[in-house]
Length: 501
Image (tube, rainbow, N blue to C red; front, top):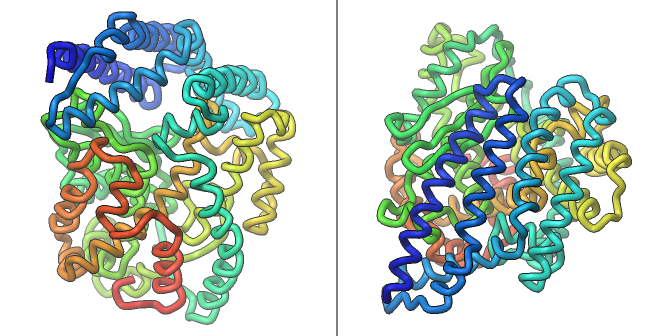
């Protein structure tokens, strides 16, 4: 390790502090900021993003990277490699484009809230047009610097090293097998006695208390984070200050509960990253596929299992003051409700069997938008056609169609495929974890998540970005990422009804 490398660590620690400030301001924008201050906040964020970009792309940084030698320490060597990757992404973009993107996406996100509420795609179209045009410029600039197509360059920002050529064969298999699998699961489900619905209302204050209890049960450190409400659930914040959100509806507590569990999976990853490296690139998460694997591990793999339901059933009855013997609130029925499969319009509420179909549709659409093969004015119809083709549903309005997600309004093209890849990774990781430690499911049945979290800490969280996503998955599971474990899991849980499913 030489002086140039040591200087780089100091520079990146400063950049980490700026990122933390941006994280809190973005959280505030989603959770608490008055609508009328959107333009000023857009300016604030743009200036800070511009400052971050200016530091990262300064000539001094390039000189230091050229001179740096990290020595023999594997973490320092990995850190230097991450520094160079981040620098390459940054220097591909001029500062004025970075600021323009920040301003446009901030304005777009605020406009999207109103457009989504009013199902007004036409009114939102100018904002999305501006965001897409700027995102294309980003993709083209990064693609030229990285030797990639514009879409692959955008994808690399969210999942370093992953390319369409990696995704397409996996998604092709899902596209082939999902329709028949969904049909088989629906047929099997229809042959069983109907589940008993839970009768509300479910007061929001009690739902919030339940969410906080589950967060703590999973191991979330409430002294280093918080739970709030936003239009779209997310996990954000800053180093040592991990903030997550959900949204509530009084007639059904399950979506909010599962939303909290999903975001807590993200948060546990953030709180489990190696403390000694948090201010450095190597100490950050290893891309969004790994991140989504952690949220879906908690929400889908574990917290819809029979083991979890056995533990949570008494807590749910206590929370909502239901008699212990009430049939609808027994583990059998609750498990049926939590594993109910029903093609639906809303991605974030989708069950784990139909969920990948939502991503296949968005993946195709965003690739076409970036390439210029799909005009934005035609997006609603193309989205609706995709939903009908894969899920057999008719979309009644744009609020439940192409306006439902925040990603495109925020310029997050290239993010969506990570959700499906994360679902596959979560199944593969859970299968490996349960094979390696037979005590995990019994521990979950007692509300003890510590053994599972320890396995994840060891095999995923503690590695941060010292290894790539494929390397982490292969090392933890003994095989490259594929659809095998996910498809086997769906058949086991929904068709075979295996005991721990």
